[in-house]
Structure formats: structure tokens, C-alpha cells
Length: 75
Image (cartoon, rainbow, N blue to C red; front, side, top):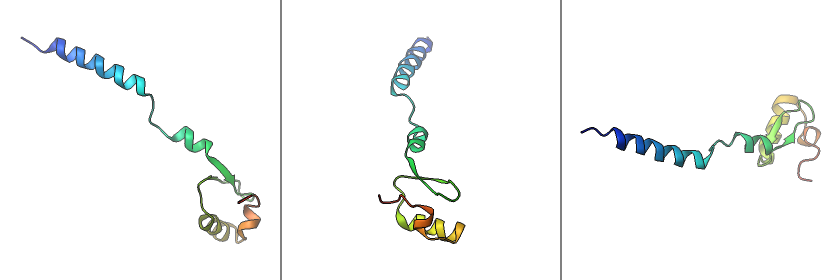
């Protein structure tokens, strides 16, 4: 009186469920969303990055203004 058949059926059902959903990783989506590029060091930033973070990068990394590092930002 084992539960071998039940366990096998459950594994099969779970494999079907997880196979249909696919990957939940956002890595590919995040890579595609990196469209802001520093013109000095070519570092990529997500499109959702706000101006204060870009200003901080410009000042701390390059001692330049945001418009020198990101000339196309906001256009």
C-alpha cells in the first residue's frame, strides 16, 4: 500500500504547470531597458533612472555636469 503512483502523478502535474509558465527572470527585460549611456565611461543605466542618480554619477565619477555625461537625457 504505497503512494508511489500518487507521487508520480503529482510530479507529472507539477512538471506540466512549471513548464507552461516559463522563466520568471527579469534579466533579459532589464538588459533591454538599459538605454541611458554615460558618454564618458559608457556605463549603461536603466531607462527609469532619475536625474539625481545621473547627476551623482557625473559628479562623483567624472567631476563633470550631467549634461556633459548624458547629453541626450530628457530629449
